[in-house]
Length: 509
Image 1 (tube, rainbow, N blue to C red):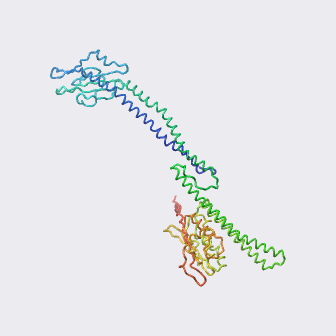
Image 2 (cartoon, helix red, strand yellow):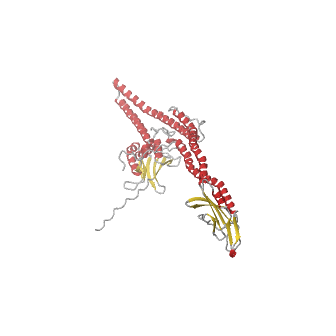
Image 3 (cartoon, rainbow, N blue to C red):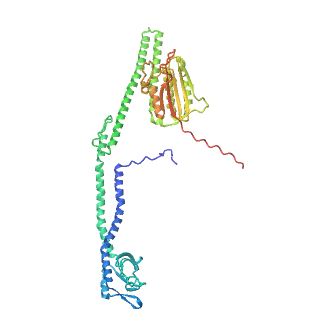
């Protein structure tokens, strides 16, 4: 069980590119080396067998030339070996291996040589076809050369068999010498090869080290593209991706600077008005000739300026919250209908002051509302800014409606805010989401951040937002109402939770 201070998962160990490539290069080499040793052993055995097999075959032919087949009594052939014992001793003479030979007659009877030699497993082969096989004699491995002589032609008789065998000491020694001659140099070549691979790999990745040094030496404000000329071809796409990131970062920082400059300018206006009205009121009080009504107007202007400044600061804080990735990751079910209904209630006093009919359409308390998965504070900020924007641009006598609808087939929950204001021209509908942008021809006082905050919240929740005319373009009422604007936000529905298991029925006992 994890303790309160134990990490849920250990950080992944950082891998070395140099080590990875070296492992993938050396692993096949070390895997193939034992296979090479085994293959060398087989080849050495084959090479060692060839000369000794030829000698063994010649010895078998020499003995075969001394075999005599004569007619015997009773119509049977008699097979004999005219090999003096001294000659047989000469044939057996070997300083290293033991030599065996055997001659069998036409009926399989033993004629001469060593009885312990086993017989071949196959039937007699064509005349004088020399064959070889491996056998075991007296617990020793031997190599056997054998062939059948010409058949006697008599019924019931088989060709006489001549076999010569020798132990494998000479062959093993020769094979061992061959293996030593091949394998021992590999013990020198293999470490040298590993060293050369190491050096070549180090040389190959040296451009990466140089690239790293160039990046480390850069100033923190230097966002210019990295030079790709000296980068290897395989690394060029990676450098290009970094350059693309630097370009986007440069653009983002530029936008941040522009945003801060605009924010400072927007704050400067109400603060300057606040200071001017305060100085004016102070001057009238100091001179003693101040008109109470004039001082009252100055104080009222101070209140308005401070309210605008406070609203601007609140909007800036809301913008910062909307851009906070950590906050956006803390998701939980959000009842959109309940949240929209509460927000509309909060704006009722402002709507009454402006003479605007503010309403809500959607699920009421107790009805199953459409629930999305998100950050409640950010979603509330989105609804507040949409409703506040509609109230700002709708003239007296107009109507603003917040509407919530669930679309289970599209797996979305829809929020709509509709007004009867001047509307937004189609060419400006993307630009209104930029910070501090105001549609042309409007004299509305505001921070210019409301819809920018809305766009940030929409993106954080993987939602979609669109703007359309509430009524046909060109519509105008006697109260000065225009075609209006219809903002539609589509949030993905939260996944349905599995039903809780029903309690088990009590059993009689």
